[in-house]
Amino acid sequence: MTRTSPPASSSGILIQPDMPICQTDLPLDWYQEEFKPYAEEYLALPDRTPETVLPWMDGYIHPALDHFGPSLMLLAHYYMGGEIV
Image (cartoon, rainbow, N blue to C red):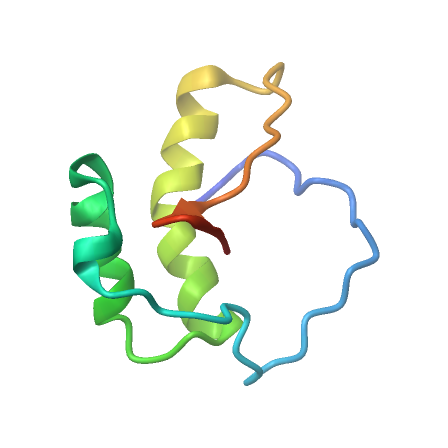
């Protein structure tokens, strides 16, 4: 998906390439039923590096931003089976 809107301002956070950004993978049965399809996708990713996880997340984030528009202040965390990742 190509985005035409300007990127968000930098937070100053630097992410180290090739360093896993998610600490723990939980078994699928720990997830609420509503989250299991997303958990299955996440668990099927080949690794937890920014190069893999962030593009996967973009598949959900970009449609939400497209739907709600630029006035939305998105404060989100990714709640996966009891842990914030």
